[in-house]
Image (cartoon, rainbow, N blue to C red; front, side, top):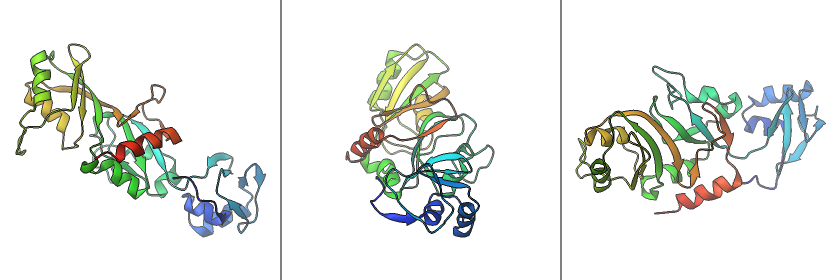
Amino acid sequence: MSAMAKKLSIERILHNQGFGSRKLCRILVINEEVTVNGELCDDPDTTFELENLHYTIKGEAWVYHEKSYLMMHKPSNYECSHKTQHHPTIYSLLPHPLVERGVQCIGRLDEDTTGLILISDDGQFIHRMSSPKHKVPKVYEVTCKHAVSDEQIAHILKGVQLVDEDAPIAALACTKINDHVIHMTLAEGKYHQVKRMVAAISNRVEALKRIKIGRLELPQDLKVGEWRWLSASDLNALQADGQNQ
């Protein structure tokens, strides 16, 4: 997933990174609004190696990424869609160039659900992380309206029958954190699955937060509404998860 050892013109680099049309990127360079590796660049045809390439656009610092691999702490009342119906889109929380690159969230969260979400423009990575056959586990922190009994936990682990499902569906794991909060691990991503499973044990979800995808945990220092690039270790862990079948 690292940048290939090759050279491109700064005009093409900026275009590929989502900063507009080739013509617009050319103008940015000619207008002396671009620096590359700490040096002013005013020739749009100048070529640079992509490995470890740092640049600024109008004073804003960027690092070259061949593909985008991001995590976000999704806020409540945001939709995981480019075409929203009732709430703002999570893509409005990202810098415009990343949106221009065509990034997509991997596995949508409901508008009222918060927590960890992955975003990328790498189609193979998106498929590997979202395909049901790879069964990448997700952990949810579930706040329930009523106190959760040990019998209800056992029911979730054994399997609950949902409407429109042929067979009962069980959680991979379910741990009681306190009387009203449980951590539930699922490998599927069925419609409103956590809410429906909790309803099936005669309870109700008051708040829902995804705290882990595979081996990747929601960082404690990633505030609600914030995003960051996935590190090399993050990607290695997720690659291992995506290879599980």
